[in-house]
Amino acid sequence: MKIRGTCANCGREFLPEQVTDAGGHCPWCGKAFNRDYTALLVQALQQADRAGDVLEDALKDIASIEELAMDIDEESVLEPLRNALEAIRRRRARV
Ligand SMILES: [Zn+2]
Image (cartoon, rainbow, N blue to C red; front, side, top):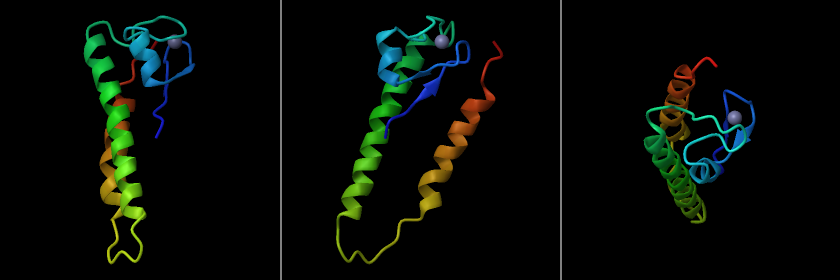
């Protein structure tokens, strides 16, 4: 998966690695996404990016097994992610 974010200041989209390269700032307008937690934010974005790929690859591995006698509950995977993303939206700063 490719995690994309949008800068609340300039409205442009970015990828986690662009935020890493920009030192926790928007790669387009240069604004810090948060004054105090820049390092934490960079680390967490990188971790989410890697973990998303790991999760997706693992699910694809399961999907590659033919005649699998199980289902994976879709909501058990998606609901916690949706809730976390919703919590991020609620934290959005007014700029
Ligand atoms: Zn920006």
